[in-house]
Image 1 (cartoon, rainbow, N blue to C red):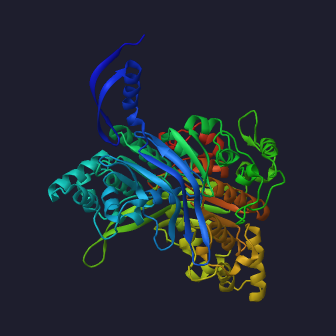
Image 2: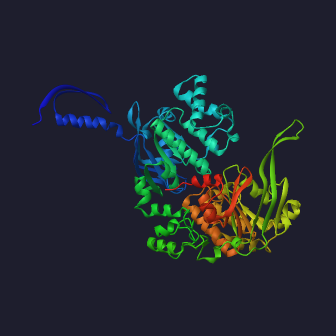
Image 3: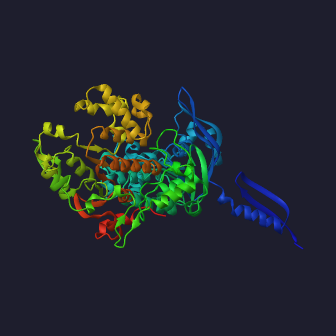
Length: 637
């Protein structure tokens, strides 16, 4: 029999201080003690049945619907899904940064564990209370650091500004804190970067400045919205390791948003999968990644190019969901798209086989690399190519210093081949591609296209040849004129080069190309802003095809796309290669994508080629330490 004791018990609870006097038995004491021990396990963020709508003037669009999730102190929640799934809208709703003119929370609650006031419902806070909360107790790292940083303010003062605002420190104290943060996020030469302008830093360095700004007031909750998108794999790995170490050191709760499950797997302990504004699946990372219960999660996992094997076609979301995309993002529905099981069987049947000597042999002979066939005359031959940029001039404008972006590069590309070009940001990949296209003139060396030296040609001679080789740029939105319909943008180069007899024939050709890349003929009169990122990239591909080229340079053409949209664009590029007999130079920082697409791979560093070889052999047995570093940085789970 449990004896009763009389005591004066003083307890603290979330609501405030409560004094309890009286007789309590031992079981009651255990219960109260247990409650006190679990208080710290209350979520720091609790989103309950949240719905957000956008009013466009013509219609009401539901962005997220009935979203519920929790983030606990010291926990990393990974929020994953395609573009438009509602990830960023959820984060912006938490931070109260949604546009008031178009967006509103139609229902639901967002509870935050305020260290002084307890649980508060963020939508009910005044603007002043919310402003004092943002930056100090909750902070956000945005996807694009260049647009998030003030271009006309130096980096250091931007970080110090947050410290001055929230902690009322003096200027010297804020500067010291900012420099300490720069060291903590492992920025080189903190004093110099403190005085640097945003445009003077690399993408990875700008992202570190954004992380330092978010960490300035030691927030309890950090929201990281696609912080590594479009960064090369080594910089991405550094940023992920940095965020993980900061989270562990400061015991922060983190909501990490990404479309890449490979990235999420490296940082998150719990994963929430979103699609079309709804939560599709949630659970421990190990379970979601290894035993996904929702077909959509399985689709996201299958869309990622594998380093172990190369199927003829990458799986697409529609293959698993048994549906056709409403916005026509897909090329066409494959014959097995109605059943997930059938898709898996069809994918398995299309896997590549390994011959005795380890060389890839595909059942689809159309993707056999021409480079492995008996030697032919190259379509393109680069001889000792060098390109330099002037970095400093004297008062008279004469060059004093140069930066060598491409240094003594030589290689060949054969008909029907896809040559992959990989390396970190700043290694010279894009400069090499633009020099081949003669958009940048080389300082020395030769660019031979079917024996003709492009580097020695005049502008008029080059113009007559431009129909034979084209380039697809990294940013499709920046590549299209916002004031020109996409049909006119595709038709314009045909008019410039006098292709076909009249505009009626050219328009018919544009309609044909739009269908070829998975869009609709009625899209002709729509403008670039009305399309998704994947659709805009398809428009750029259609514009390149309008010239009937033999050779295309793809410069980071899928780097900022979701894995699902990326799979569709890569499948499209391979389909077009087989149909038109195209030759590609495929430039990317994503080594898994390059391996899937390429027959041979060139690895660049500091403007020079450090290694070149067949794709499978190079990945299986890299010779150079730099190549091994790049391969080792690829996210995996």
